[in-house]
Length: 476
Ligand code: NDP
Image (tube, rainbow, N blue to C red; front, side):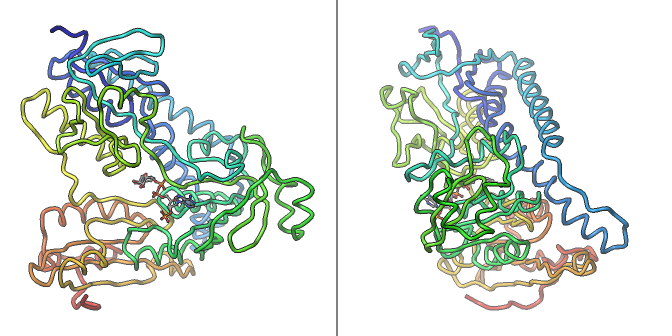
């Protein structure tokens, strides 16, 4: 049977684009459909614009520190309009880079939504049908909001980059990556940030001690973090609500930015009984795989409990001609993981070299201020698995202490008592993302504590503590 294409990829995010390019480079005839902008969540409304906002937000503390170091600076004000203009110009540039990479690899691009019609057929939004020997679904995920009345008054991470004005106050709901990163970003940009997290501590799943320090540092920077708290009611802020509030609460709707396209300031009631008005309520309450309306189940593709596409170790779905990679599979929701899954797919399907993407010991970073970098097991998970030694130090870094700040950092290694292997490394510090990338190499190689110790310290740095911790703080 002959097909229009050897491979049709649905979704032009990091994973889909990488799979399309690498498959095309083997000589395969490849097409890719993307309904929005090329680059997907990471490039257009996720990691990249987020990181640029992290940089932008860092300057407020940096300017204060510079003054403490003797620089004469006039306190300035952040101009969102200037930043936003540059940000979108950069995103346009990156999108065009993605397009030209596809073009150079001779991938045919359809700028439209596509769905499955059968195991070898894709239907485009205008009804055109094309056939392919293999179909790869890489449609990613999307933010979800809780099912409460008026939840549509809130914004989600996609909206942040499109705001017309910087709000005066924002309530963030959630305690995961996105909630904590944006709490720090907005706080750094001068927004009054309140954060509600329903659990006992933010960043569930990360090392207990590390997330505890991140929470402390966030609070010390001025983020009004409420643990064990959630939103119970929300409504457009009106006179009736403002009448209930204190003078300072009521200042929100009078003074804040409007016009994010989502409407006016929002009145909120919390589980602890308090009421307040915020310019925006930002739901960072998780993401869900984008599998709706793709004709997956009709084509026989099995979905999991959260709507994710169920795949085997080689990213193959329950329909042999259909594969899936990235967030839509609900494995590890990180761009570099999706890219690796895309490359492993090409190895398996187009290079005759069956390859499982490696999901073990994936380092990652939460870009809070300070950042949290992590690889391997948390202390809690490791202690459940086997007897461990914990090497841990927390201290005021030199540059911050000199500036008169009380900021603390944390360097932590979890070591197997039996094999001496470093099972986990957790760093809370400025630039922890950069540090954990390198520590990740050692941990992935199976380095022991003694291997770390054999490495001479780079002095004076924060990371030198990783090779100078002589005795365990405790065993577990
Ligand atoms: P997360 O799953 O990390 O966090 C969702 C948060 O929302 C949790 O704190 C959760 O609470 C809370 N929540 C869920 N439902 C409700 C509800 N109904 N009411 C109140 N709170 C609720 O999702 P994110 O959207 O932050 O991030 C999604 C994924 O994207 C991450 O897991 C990560 O893989 C990836 N990502 C990675 C980044 C990076 O590498 N730096 C940056 C951003 C995202 P609870 O803990 O109680 O469930």
